Length: 299
Picture 1: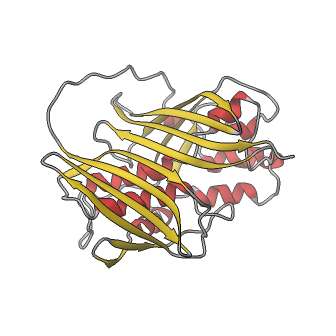
Picture 2 (picture 1 turned 90 degrees about the horizontal axis):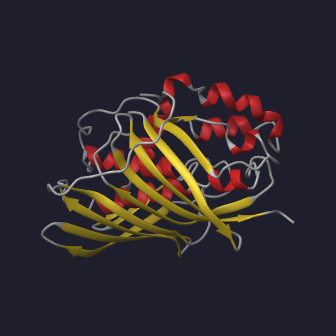
């Protein structure tokens, strides 16, 4: 396991300060706010710690309310909405400086057999044939707003091996393309098959929380591609996540390759919508993701 992945796992290991109240910290941010994927993953960890291990998340719905302060702890309060025979529902509010910054509703289910079908996995090249971030990002450094941006991006994503199938938005600013993007990702190191001693979440929950963390990294790329925008690193848009929803269909491992197939059906009113499916390498549809974000052109 890489040091960066170990640091991420430590970040997700929240401190319990009361029965249903947890405290988390933040890592150094690329921009002066808490990374949205971090707060979403931590909130899901908090919810999962109040649910029986046999029940795993099948959906989450979240709103990003305010920019998080990366220098201050985040307190997560869990509300036990419902404990049914098959489903468990939790609501989590993340608070900083006395104000809510994030709201999450998550539903958990005991596994059961049922009807089963799925769409076909889209074609994509093998991830091993694609350049790593360390190999590709320096090539685009002259497009960024500062010489330090490439290294900051690499540091922020060091826990994840994320490889673009095509050129990322910051590669071709000013050239509109089809609003579709693909990336392969997995954690930068293998995870234990069993939780470590003292861990209070089960192994399946950990993989779901890690996928939630990564899901906020590239989902709005397809919006940028449609308009030939390079993103915040290029300086031709400013933006932030507004809301985020995920449905977990089938088991998967976050330390094995997952294909993140993303597209944007629309943008308007200063907002852009991204929708995506995440597939296991052997073709199983694991996750559906939808997110809307603020995307504004600087004046």
